Image (cartoon, rainbow, N blue to C red; front, side, top):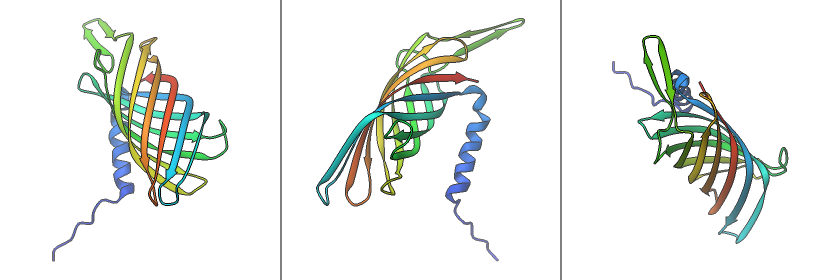
Length: 191
């Protein structure tokens, strides 16, 4: 009797991805950012559009270096129209960052009796991402791609400040589309 293999469902795949990132967590950094946003949405099927902006964009992310100048970025974003409350938009971000002038992280060297950590103080980067958003008030999901540019300032071996500008282009149900521009400022904690 031949057994058939069932495809891996989404929840098991999510657990496996988290496990892989957890194994590598000691070499990564955690980003906590807040900032302002500008959001606009339109629906071509009924010719409606709306836009709003303000303070209330929040992000937490895990970032880990791959190769010398690249970094994988797995994050979760929240947009609150009234700063803390109001209408909420939330979802996952998966990105790839490129550091054209520096390494993506610190370089560690060791010799018997001595350890050294080298890192650039200023690290500009650019990146691309896939983003998914759920909107609480309309119960709709949007997904799409984004681009970003940022600058990281290394203050200590484990702590840096970061500023990022992101532009997302999202598509949703019933011929709707949205765009989001974020200006985020925050910190990175390296483990």
